[in-house]
Length: 52
Image (cartoon, rainbow, N blue to C red; front, side, top):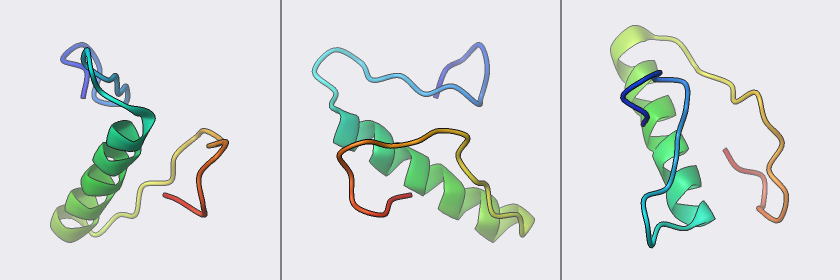
């Protein structure tokens, strides 16, 4: 998660697209558990099964 804006995710060197998707899913789960709000990504994932 970017330290400049919590709505931006970036992979560090050696990170993969799968790593970024896993991070998105983890953040979604934590926010829903703590705040009761389900975040919906404003992006379209290509090459992934129905995630996140």
